[in-house]
Length: 475
Image (cartoon, rainbow, N blue to C red; front, side, top):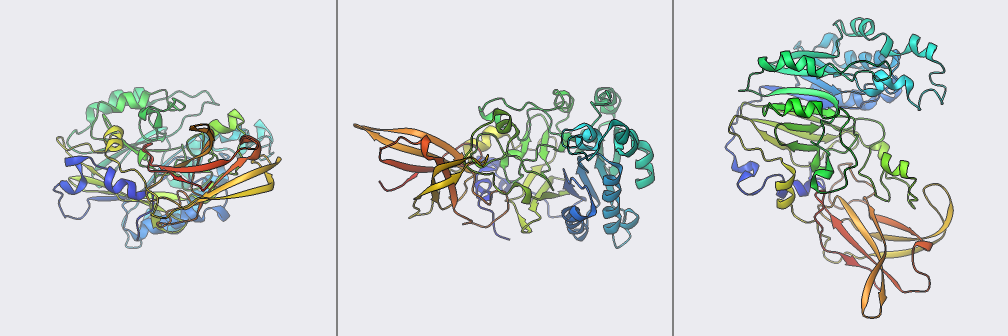
């Protein structure tokens, strides 16, 4: 497999100085445990469970000991969605077993869609669940214990502990806000924490990322626009346990973004999004963000093909390290170099945000890269409103996460930026090889000064916000 274009960043930035992975002396033994990692599979019927099934078959062929799904098994939260998930699981792992008869542990938790999906705006207004009475009859939130026992042959509890190959997994399902349920984590942890063996890793799974950990771009100095969904409880409790590996999803952010793994007092890993809309950080002209939708931002471009992002990971646990192999299930390619987390009381912790930002290499355009500019007299913005537009196009830069495109006018003896946008490559997050489709950025003509000679510049940025050199269009 070739390295993805954004994966290039990690090759020089995942570790700083003496903390580089190849500076460690790791053993060469076989892994003690293999676990498939997914989140947000959003199965609603058999016809759209193909990515879930494909991922399970890949994990099966890799010889996993278990598969973890970090919530949002379905979307509307109906019983028949979970029945479909169970049917696909047993098609691949009949009797919870691999073809050689080994047990493959089911490490599933419920997400917000599974327990509160019946009350979401995407359900009732579309008449998918026409009434509260219908919800009480057909939705999982009202029948969790009964349905879980029928489908999986085990008791359901908001928090359960399972053991796989001698390693413990704490599985914390989303509790229903709609039904005014209580968060049980604090009470559970009071009894569980004294039983933790500090000499070996344990795994904690909840649907949302623990606050101020992975995907928290504001930790690098950006705007505080997302602060976690659990009020910080899990971060506070897990911070007492440096041997904890927290696994989560919910954000739908791409795992080829190096901010999807974080180390501080513990380790936090984003399991990605296996199906549904992929979200992006706000403010990108062709991104997909709840914050942008709420602000009613006037974007000139539709979002990139966010429905095609299908991601997951294979986690291998060794005595001295944990390795995360990132993969996407559209092109069946890797999403960058493995994340290798050293294990042990004195092991280095190389995945802090700031050291990786400082060590990262700026992305660069290939020699001879140029910008082309095209007038679009009959364009339409994202909302479908007709307007004159100007499109700016250029090749992708090696190691780029996104691009800043500026419209520049010369005034007397200086140049001024009169309009600026950030954009993603159209095939971002799909594990494409170096090169990829050209990047396109669209301005409304009325965003640009009339009657002036406008030039355009494009500057690549890596996911840490470090810029490369700009290229500029001809005058």
